[in-house]
Length: 202
Image (cartoon, rainbow, N blue to C red; front, side):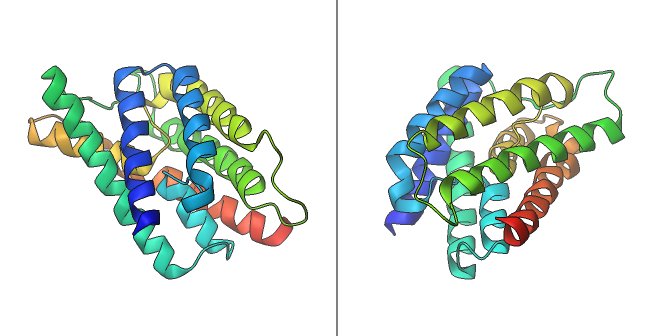
């Protein structure tokens, strides 16, 4: 139950950071703080792409995979609802007008893969203990990937947070769900590849 609550609350707070700030560096620092605070309890995933990769690389059990995914989705939807309730506005996700489908999927997949692979090496080191700056590395890596991906695809690089924003947007007659196939599945494919790479070479 503690692991579930940690993933739910952490994902909720990360959703609020992305929704209120939208500034990648600020979001990255919040993720770094959450990683240091929560990694001793739940490994501080807060992202289904990370959780899927951890399971594929045999770092967590199937039961924990399911627990974390439910917690992350619940936390993200709750966070998106809180933003809408407090501000009277919902977050709309959409790619830049000049972004075509291939670029959209490629960018989200590639930078989700990069972030998740770095996360696995920092949180689940195979030969030594965690590097003392593991949380900062995770936060900076996410910020850097978000800086590149967000202006092009409008992505959060986090399927749970994207789901939360799209769900609230849909309830308010928005159109973010038109891009669900990319926002949800491209990062998950990236996470899958990262998990396979880490399983083989980590």
